[in-house]
Length: 443
Length: 153
Image (cartoon, rainbow over all chains, first blue to last red; front, side):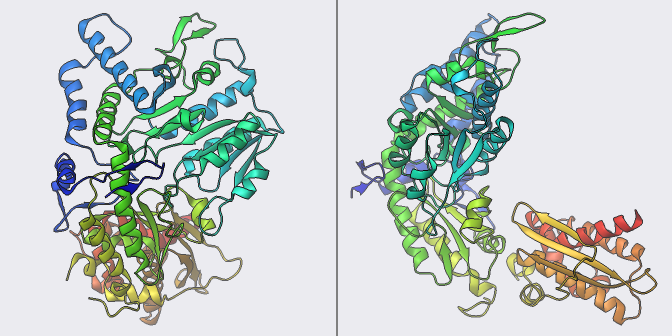
């Protein structure tokens, strides 16, 4: 069976045997939780790690551990080679140049880096010790545009940047069905817009942002486009250049890689013009007691001893997903998403935030069960060995907009199965009856 | 009884659906406590008798999961019972009770709540095995503790 993939590509879903082979690579999936086989449906919070990623990180510590970009001994050379090879792997994954890939601690740091660097540019600091990054300076009257969908990590740094520079923060509102108001976007993005920062995929609704309709609006007025790709990178082929964005960030741990590593893609010309975010060793050419000259990107943005083992682990994770093929992962997850959404639609007294639109979304659904708080609902799933996220998922404004304080989120990964989805559906259906609401007495 | 049924005893579900002690007066001194993880919120007041030395009632308002709401309701009920029994709490007694409640909830199931001391609120013992939920159950009690500490100044 061929399934339409959100990007318009068609690919075959994994066969049952292939899926079994994928699952066998995740040691944690052998675990039992509360007497049931673990059904891990929280990949949107953090993905589980295939053994090869765990081994790659461990092998670095066992065999090649040394500081990178300093020292001349053999291990230092090997470690540097492995670290830079990781950067090349990420660059190839994104189809960008390696000097456009900056390793950060997480996506949150990557977004803060961009916002802070723009703030520094706004007070006349430049990419060198003295050259000003004037084209990117913000001032009162300028506008930063985000969306009401954003994760707090792609909202608060912009709130702060606006506060520091006097620029105005505006947002593209969300409609009742959870979709962005594209009509409003056309009036909000305008001559004053200097930055458009938006998510590629909502971590609450799973909807894929119609970038083809929004990015041209920003381009037309010369605004920078910053893309939060945390929820898209694990599910669809991420091509920042094709998307025509200046910056794209994602976290390693959501892409089956280690924690403590994030990726910032920045268009070369932008990275070259931006001042640093953190200052210290490994990012300078010449230092006197009065001033410092900085290295070019990406080193300018990687001060201190970098996340070497994590970068190597992430590169292995990228080889893991590209080995399967992002298109095939998307096709497999898409079939499961249809199953999940169709199943949820059959359960009474339940609302899926962002509706049950199956096209143009990744495999996650945030649910509000009538009369039952998400925290209580999640407990019923946990009892059944199902790991699902409860809370506001770091998106309080979106929850408020959709009339919920918290939701229960089911999110799929490359290892998810129809059986796991069915178990989750059964558990979700049992929530209201358990708490004594219509559907029968407590079991 | 399954773990889930121990956590959500009928008393807890009943209190979460029909909470006691709800309703604050305008302008009375309250403590507002929030669990940012799940959005549970409790605003609570301690009402003192004419002598100002005994707790006459516990009043609160809030929203959130059944554990947080039931726990506030059970605290209010326990206060009512102490008045009915003719031994309303002194600040010291309530402080000791809160300490005991916290110790039991943090015991990971090792120390159940004493039914003699906690009455129906002893049904919250099951929470102690669910580390992620302890904060939910503590919310109202932390609000009371906050008010006692302010009073002690």
